[in-house]
Image 1 (spheres, rainbow over the protein chains, first blue to last red):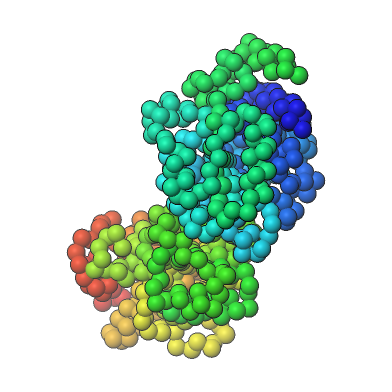
Image 2: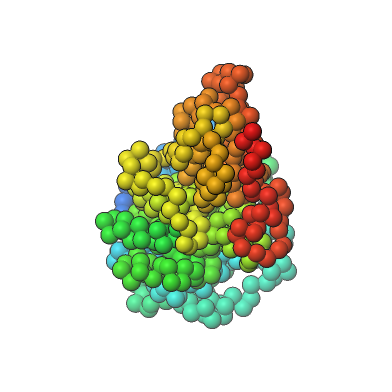
Amino acid sequence: MVNHSIEFARQIRALTLKLVYNAKASHIGGALSMADILAVLYDGILNVDPGAPDYVERDRFLLSKGHACSSLYATLGLKGFFDLNELDGYATNGSLFLSHTSHKIPGIEVSAGSLGHALPIACGIALAAKRKKEQWKTFCLVSDGELNEGSNWESILLAPQLKLDNLILIIDYNKIQSFGFVKDIVDLEPLRAKFEACRWNCFEIDGHNHSELHDTFVKCKESADSAPKAIIAHTTKGKGISFMEDSLLWHYKSPSEEQYHMALQELNQYK
Amino acid sequence: MRTAFINQLIEEASSNNNIFLLVGDLGFSVVEPFAEKFPDRFLNVGIAEQNMAGIAAGLAMEGYCVYIYSIGNFPTLRCMEQIRYDICYHNLNVKIVAVGGGYAYGALGPSHHATEELGMLRTIPNLVVCAPADPYEAKAITTFTACYNGPCYIRLGKAGEPEVHKHTSDESKQIVKGTILSIAETGNTTAVFSTGSMLKYVVDFIERNNIASSVYSFPFIKPIDNTMLLNLFIKYKSIITIEEHQASGGFGSAILELLYEFANQGLLAQNQFPKMRRIAINDQFYSVAGSQEYLRSVAGLELKMEYFD
């Protein structure tokens, strides 16, 4: 199971790299930091059907850090939500595949680009499920930097009040935001204590360890606890491509031809 | 108007199980009957309008017809981006309701003067923008929005406004999207176009001074029925627009835009062009306490006899 999702994550990274390289797009660092999270979620955790992306009983997954959408598009394409060839136009003239998530794409629940929007929406979706007594879960993935946005904290305060035990928030804590290290801009620490003080059931894991990711997701889905769940996933920006790792530059930069081939070679050696 | 709104919403919710009401910790002694009757479709999200708008979007994605309710600028300006991006871009079935349009909360100061939101909101695609004039229109707009599948904004007055519409059972006054309502057709030269709760003042002024002028109420600022509007442009030589809103981008602006649009399309000949006068707030904040009537007067939202010469 884990080996399968590890190979899936490698494929996601390789396709993400190709998309960003071809479009000369940005934000590859944050797309790579969440690749393992996506791989595990879409490899058996999320109850979704590529052939029926809107079926009612599906689990909902909302990507809030919409700028990192290249790896989500790669994930959905590899899972068969749409023809992979459609991704060729990613972020180029006329393509529906914008360089922020678009709800016009099968499998994407919400468009996101402005930060701090998806968690309140996820609360609404989770609330709807509670009121309708539906069993499906709502997952929301946010970046660390976007926790600067006050709108998130409005939701973080309210979700436990509403006992949204069906809401699972994942924080891709890669420690870097637009201008530098999170700790130097708006330090989030102690982050776990903040969530726990707000009465969330909080988990802190290695966001690249597939066993930990898998087990934590299962625990969250099966929990009988009435609290919403927060998973602080410690990750590395640019994970999987050594020269991109932990570097602010790759929040913005697009790889050159030489860098593209170097990166691809590195990913292929783990095949 | 707020009582007419909530009573009608309760009626709509009795036959439509998808109607959900969110409030931002406001609406004390107004929304309780709804909350008591439909506890599963009511939530006070607290003082957090961005979250309220986002939650509304999420609920609407799951099939609810969601009303969000607060006062003044809080459910609009405070969460403008959530309205634009989460609600309107996704074209969701969310109705944004603001109580206290214009200077209704006059004495509370500029924080509570809702005098810019129409201009901001009417630039947003997919959004229907409504400003009912009296309890009759508030009730009709509530029914319209409950039946309409898409985002709407409803600017209400406060409480206790009298009915201006006299024949509420008149079928010609059924409200459909974009409609313009005829209040008085006593003159063929001049017409006053009013939106929102200015209507009562306009009708009183016309009647008190025995002026031969027609009056039309615009419960919709966007869209406005183009055919009806074009006919009014052709019919009247002089048109006065009046609104409790900044001149920039508001109701009068919308009317002027359409006038020039019709002219550009060749629908209106040069000699049919009416003389236009726009009564609106002149790009200022007013840091003075007072009633709604007082602030309207200070801001120059008044008709004058010479406008009808």
